[in-house]
Image: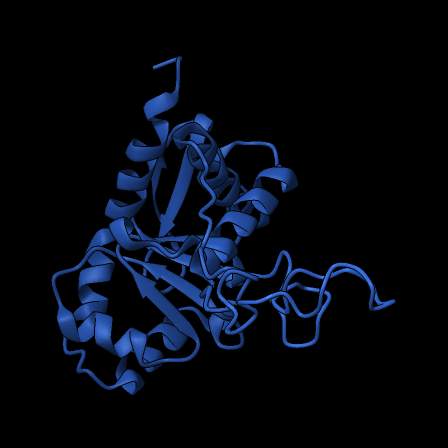
Length: 221
C-alpha cells in the first residue's frame, strides 16, 4: 500500500510504499487495553508498606493465661485482631511487573499506526522539507511553532506528536518546550503519550524505519 507525503504547504509531494501488514490492521481495543494496563502498572511507584505480625513491636509474652480468666484465649498482642497489632494481607512494598510478549507489542504498535492513518491524522512530511523546517531554528519554541502553523493551519488547536530523526538539537529542544507538541525519535517513541495526541507528524525516513521494524513478523515477506 502507499502513503502520500506532503511538503511544507500541505501539498502532495510523493507516494511512499509501506507494508499493509503494518498500516492496514483492524482496530483491537483489547490490545490497546492490555498495553495501557502494563504501562501504568510498570510506571507507578510502589512505596506502600505495612507491618505484619512478625514485624510489629511488642507481644513477646502471652497476654493472659490460657484458662481461668473467662476471656478469649490469645497468644500475642501482635495478632491482626488486636489494636496496634500487625496488618493482615497489607501491601508489602514489593512491585510486581507485567509483561507483553514481543509479537503482542508489535501488534499494538501496528494497531495504533493503522488507526491514525485511517483517521487521516498521520501526516508524512517530505524529508527535504523537514530539513528546510529545521533551518534557522533556535532553542526557543516560537520559531518552530510559527513555521509549522504557517505550513499546516489545521494543527494550531491540536496536540501533535512529532517523530523525526534529525541531528539538530535546537530543533528537538524547541519542540520539547512547546505544550502543543510532543517530540521523539523512532527509537524513543512514548506510545502511551502518542495515543493521547490528535495527530502524528512524521518524516519520510522515520516512517520507513518504523515500517521496517514493525514488518519483521510479516510471513508474506
